[in-house]
Image 1: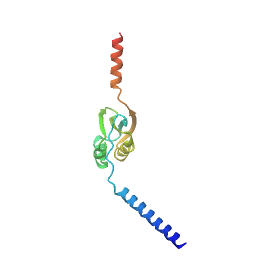
Image 2: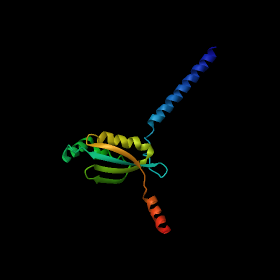
Image 3: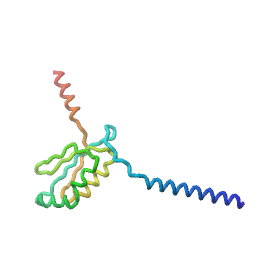
Image 4: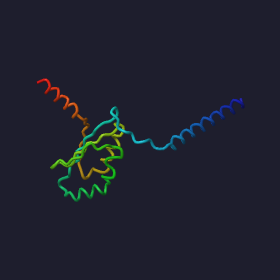
Length: 142
């Protein structure tokens, strides 16, 4: 009986030690590399940053600076496809990134753009190549 109890206690101790070592190894691992957009994991997102027209531009810029907008958005590794001014609306930004980083992109905007802008988000894709191919096909059919 004592031998069985001793064996059981030793087994429990070894399992606990192994679990603690594994947990420590997991927490000590360096952070994962930033995911890179590839054709099979990339998404594009078009963001409307609508100006608060009740405030002067200088106020909006000051708030963006206080909130660290240009330091934070876009997050490192997120590709800016286009960034345009739409007069009377604000800014329109299209970014490309791995779908797994969607929450990170969203938080960058929520934490730094809100208050200066009202935001709208639209998942998008590049249609230019498809449209040009359709035009060429239509013109060749004439």
